[in-house]
Length: 300
Image (cartoon, rainbow, N blue to C red; front, top):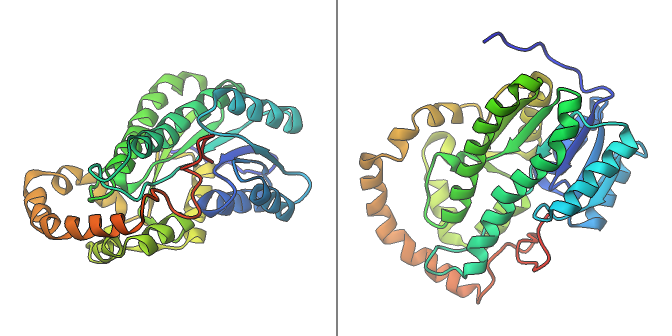
């Protein structure tokens, strides 16, 4: 397939969910710097307003829960009314619980799937009719967790694997409309979510630090956002952060196969009890201090 020419973001309308902080906010800044008009969507109005003020008066913020279809429809409509249309949607909002399946509440497991996977699908569903009008682009923020495994990440990995597969099918469904679809697969990005997890769970931090190659690497938010904004211009089908994660993706059957599992099982037998002691010390707290995943009303 011939590579698409790079498309300038100047004058384009870009909607980003989970835009109050972390990857979403950094990507919004990068897109705005390239001339895009950005609609920042999330559940932290003070943070959203701060980022929007930083970007300038030509940008917009909207408070909306990505698990609320009506709120997302309203956010898309306000974006279209303000900017005249929508060219790009970035489904970035996500959460990660601080639990194993055994130690988790049913709510934390279900909420992670609801925000990360259902929220991504609902965001895309709300934006797609407007994106199709402009033969635009959809970027879904999945994870290297879509094709790797680590104790304590069951719900997160399941949700992100679902995001990748959702994007692969969506790409086939909208190709005839001129719409392109990409999934992004970062490893460990220096965000509040990752820092909160490692601060709360020392065993998790120790295990992560010993992972080989790109699977244990930390990447700055700025470097991740740069890779993502590049995708908004090139409209490729995959983004790997760092790029070496692409090799892991290509070899995913080895990474999650029987031989690798045998090696990991030995380490897990020692580490999971330690991890669950860390979890018990949290006394019922199941999400990071900067996460809104435990709000009964929704998540960013």
